[in-house]
Amino acid sequence: MSIADLARWLTEQGVPTRTGKNRWDRSVIWGMLRNPAYAGRAVFGKTMVDNTPAGLNRRARLEGRSTPRPTKTVDRPRDEWVEIAVPAIVSEETFARVAARLEENKRFATRNTKTTPSLLQGLVACSACGYGYYRTSTRTSNKKIYYYRCLGSDDYRYENGRVCQNKPVRADYIDDVVWEHITKLLCDPTLIQEEIDRRLNQARNSDPVTRQREQVECALTKATTAITRMIEAFQEQLITIDELRARMPELRTRETNLRGRLEALEGQIADRDLYLTLTLAADLEGFLSQLSENAKSTEIIERQRVLRLLVKDVLIGPEKIAIRHRIPLRQRSSGDGASATGSDTEGDRAAGCQVRWGRTFPVVE
Image 1 (cartoon, one colour):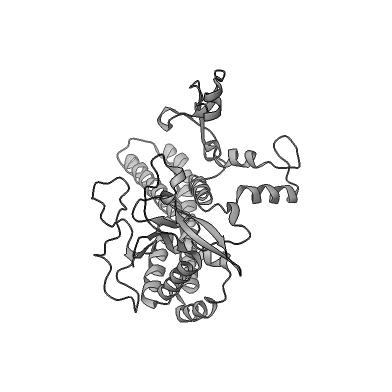
Image 2: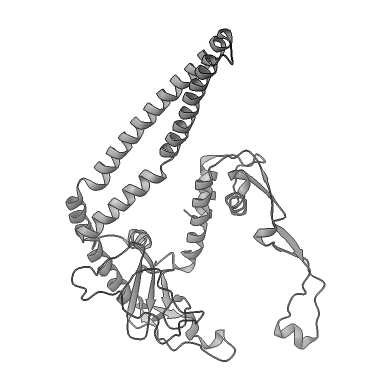
């Protein structure tokens, strides 16, 4: 959801603001989502006042006008912040997910495409110059045609004219090509099973219950060690029988409680593993058949959600299109030809070029 959607939802639910108002403003929610105090870190010195004179536009310069001394607030560098520990309301993982979602929403903002959304909105970039593609349109006598156009190919944006010679591409053509490739990719049972296994392992290792079990095991080890030391101290006559009788019941009770908590956590982990196995890996063939049946009838919004989960970005070149995936690919999907590990997606750019695309993600032409 966008921040505007959150503001409308909170207003409709009747949730009061901090000051008791019934209407939520987007700037308030934006500040809450960026405030690290909710995660237990109150920060001071995040901003500073900048007295740099503002630049004049062409008309103001020709008229000889000047501007008063400006005072604007800008963000201070992250290493200059002063942090103070405070009680946390949400976990660090939740706050990190919020920050990631803010960045994703900024990248995939709908802006002027709400009436007619585009499948590859926010995902298309130029393999030659590194600039992103934006959507534009032209109208014929019969219909309106949408295009993806490179920012570097616009003459008016740059002092010496365009910096890229890539031509616009039809949005409907490239959308169909990418979506067809993704549906073929998802119909590969081996790839899907490998991704399910990877996510199962990730869920087992990152589950909070697993970390709680490790903490309980550590506490149980300390309690057992304390009991052993108490008995050894009594045997060596370092403490009396009265001191042993006074301290031992508390240690025994702690050990019993920790063992009970450990058994409960192990039961939760076993139930979780069974649930994940049944829900993710049980009916793989049924999932793939349902996916192939619904691929052609899926709405554009649902296709966007699927595509953004699977694709990092789409690079458009003069003669080829490269898709960089989020899911690791060991080989091409069926029917795609030879392996793409050696394909070139950067054109003629040198290895040290600042706009040269990296090879962190696998590429399929």
